[in-house]
Length: 237
Ligand code: TMP
Ligand code: ASP
Image (cartoon, rainbow, N blue to C red; front, top):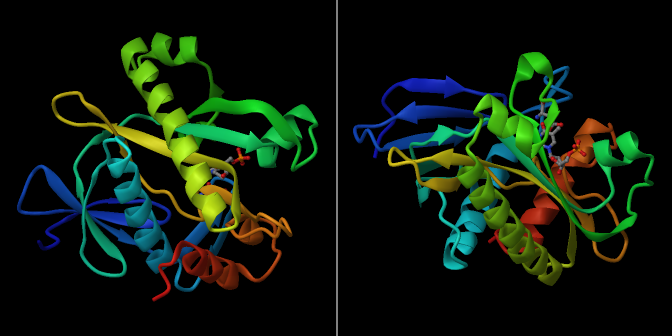
């Protein structure tokens, strides 16, 4: 499978068409941004980590009954994916308070929850990805009620699978963001990526941050944290 034309370039990846209209090739970059692109930088080797970790997680989730866009890993940075129309929502699950939740609601980072939270943001860079609720999503047609029910059910199952998997790696899954796509027949499948860019990973004992917060917050040790996550997941060989 070969790249034909560049069809999309985002902050962290490029997407190419292929000879097969149903498939595309994603290529992960080392570019890092935060705060809607305000902060820019490079995390050396990040593209490799995110490609390999995301492919690994999507394969695991497929085994657990979640349909995904993953087809095949081509090399360290590139993967073949099913072409989808992205549902314009960032779907966020939180197991403990952190980040924008802590800020918005005044709940200290690391506070445990009675149950995981599920929230949505509308994917719109010009608007700064505002938070949106179920009725608003349905009202503007970002997704139908049926699609949202499917997305919510998949998302909670994905959280259970990921929480258990990362706990075995001595990593606590604090929160994460995922995205879904529609196949041409309307089927909803998991899309985009699962990586240290899109999850908060804390060491289960020390609570050391092993994710993109080290870049967002200028904490240093960013590359080391991504490399440590590869080791924890067993992808460093
Ligand atoms: P938040 O606390 O900043 O709302 O982030 C929640 C989770 O979503 C966290 O794991 C980081 C991830 N995230 C993204 O993947 N992309 C984004 O643009 C933002 C704001 C957060
Ligand atoms: N990648 C996102 C951006 O540049 C934000 C983030 O991950 O914090 O806006």
